[in-house]
Image (cartoon, rainbow, N blue to C red; front, side, top):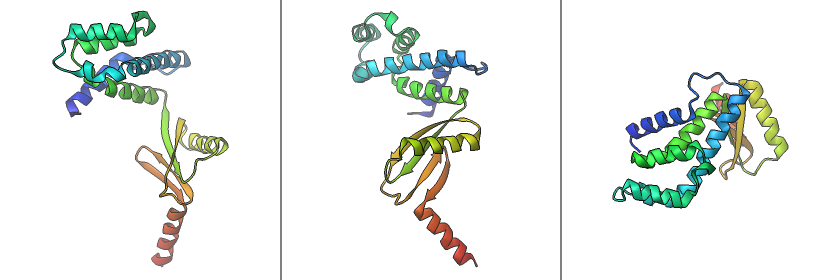
Length: 185
């Protein structure tokens, strides 16, 4: 995707979510969650028909008829459906996936939710995940959304990735640090 299109998708996401300048509170958080949920629901409904809706030869009226058949009455999806119809009408449907991702990023930033991923050899238990999440919340002062991934390259321990930051608590990492300390003398 071109950088111009990414910038446009960010603008559309900001306009749809309308969180700019609003102070965080739990009532607004619930409303923003509902908007985001509706957007995801619309996206999953139209995803199988993506190629048809993106095709440049098919005109807008036909695409609107297709949307009507796919989604049924407009009240079921609320403003998310109107937003989708706008994108189709303006020939910007190809941006929809990026808009959904950007809306999610905006929501997480607005709610001060930090995304983290823990990578280990085997899946961690719920208790272990909750403990890691509490430690990250205590260290950062933000709410944390922790996801889990399994990797064969991690032999023991785990890695936590937060944006560009990598916290290495693996066996291999500990051995490397010990090796550096021994040979530094």
